[in-house]
Image (cartoon, rainbow, N blue to C red; front, side, top):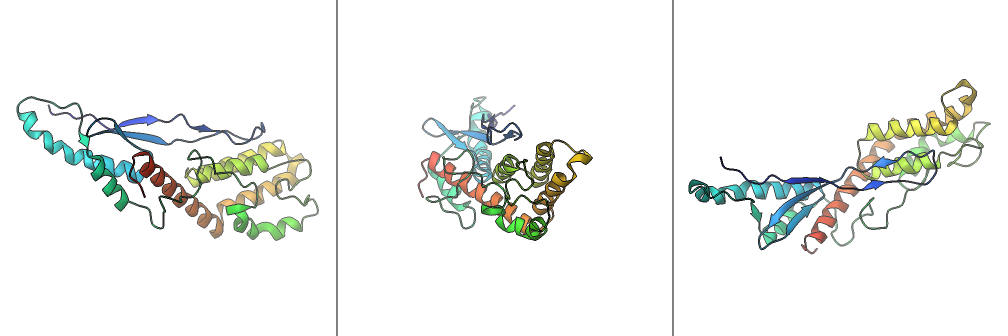
Length: 239
């Protein structure tokens, strides 16, 4: 039976931790590295969907090159991919508006990405929707990172930033954000109603507003661009 080596999926050991605060949940980044054999030796490595899709397509097309060898019972171990063709097709798969030379910062890709906390950076417009209700509450501390005196949501907000920036599913990120804030309040008991009220407002802002969907979409697009630019760089494809 004709066989070619399947794409090798390697779960990257990129467990990202945000903040040392014990209230913060550890968010596991699940990027997968797709490895293909390069003509002339070595490997082609893909972390982004665009690159992985191109590599899979090229390897599938390459199987036909070995049909004659198969007929003579010479089974190849691999389907090798020409790096020049790989780069050419990867350029064509560039995400809209993306720059290979100046991609946006993204977790685990370079050292420039940083979380923004609560109500700053990409979440500034999101929290605007609920900010007036927050500041008019008599129990508001005056600090968006810690809206209820003595309780900080900063770790929860930073972990949520990481989750969105890593293009993880939005619903899961938002649910974990809510749980982290409830934990910061000391649990979902009636004694913490004021704190839980702020947690509910924050969760509603990131999960139920148009601004939150826009911010999340922007995060996903930025991640796709950063991964594509990384694949271009790692495979020597230039700009």
